[in-house]
Image (cartoon, rainbow, N blue to C red; front, side, top):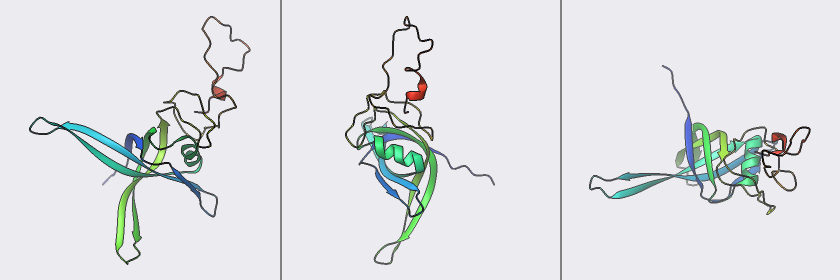
Amino acid sequence: MASFNKVILLGNLTRDPELRTTPNGTSICRFTMAVSRQFRNADGSSREEVLFIDVDSFNKQAEAISRYMAKGHRILIEGRLRLDQWESQNGERRSRIMVVAESFQFLDSPSRRDGDGYGGEGGEAAGAQRRPPRSGGRPKPRPESEEREGDEEGTDEEIPF
């Protein structure tokens, strides 16, 4: 029997992402996001259900999320479910379902974690081709009437997201 394990979530980070590195050099970023759904009860009253989902991202994606995201920022995650199991200090077997991020999009204007702001627009696709912003951030768009031939300054090559 075939199976399929795919999750798409849009929500807000509930705390700043935590970046760590394994002894073999793999970057792992763990964060929790809140996702909600609004609905009406049988009596017609509006209600909101909120879930808190733990997410792990790896390598370049982990570094980008750690660098540009902070508590409260919106993010779209595509990934897969994973069962995390461990034994607690008192010997109980514990488990939880979490998400392993395979791709993501920043939905807010990200800010650098070190305080050096980035003035770009949110919502750009993310992935392994991310580059840190150049000093000064993204170039400002110019009116269509200005000639662009031979001008490298406004190319997509400089856009970090």
